Amino acid sequence: MKFAVVGYGKMGRAIDDVARARGHRRVAVVDRSGSLARARLGGADVAFEFTEPSAARAHVLTLLERGVSVVCGTTGWESDAAELGKAARRGRAGAIVAPNFSVGVNLFYAVVREAAERYLRAGGYDPWIAEWHHKAKRDAPSGTARRLAAIVREEDVPVASVRAGHEPGRHAVGFDGVHDAVVLTHEARGREAFAEGAVLAAEWLDGRKGLHDFDAVLSDLVKGRGGRR
Image (cartoon, rainbow, N blue to C red; front, side, top):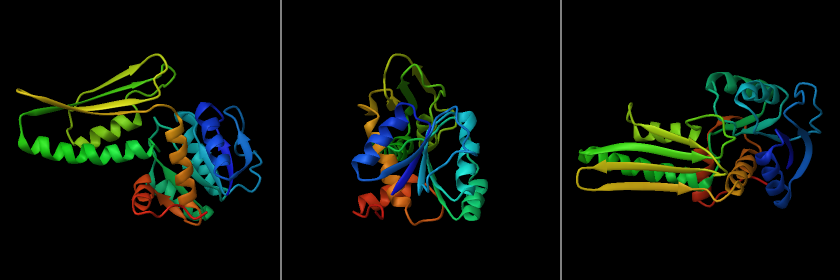
């Protein structure tokens, strides 16, 4: 698989390392100051887009229209499924846009969904969400925290965000009752998990067109079916 990296920050470099370790070939790098519309993508099959919320939409649409499939993990922007799907069909490419590509986090979503259904059905428990990230992360709450809030399905579930130090990512979902409390936590130990998940998504996307979500990738991984390499 030939790949391009759009946004060569810490996440972009981590993805580059994982992808090359898995035998894929990097053919282009577009840094944050580069113009994607004029960039030479070297015949890339897929591009990893991890930049800024203000640039993500334009980058994804440009890549799709150029016929390059996209794995986008930039958070803090609202993707329009209809718009992206149309661009993917027009460019005969595929795209996966997700707030978090960690396999562990996506499995955590399933655990939280099951817990929320049980505790909220039982009654007497107030849900809450807290998340911690490094001081350079701009969006708060994060896309992952917003996804967790949607899974809990409580309109007014409180979400607390901390941006300090060097924390790569930690999310806690709690259910607080009168007599007891339960806290479910996912803690990232580095960027490698996110990078590996993004590369797995790109491998899965190989040969597929249109807009997909990471749930489809995870479903195949759990069933023992990976990407088409």
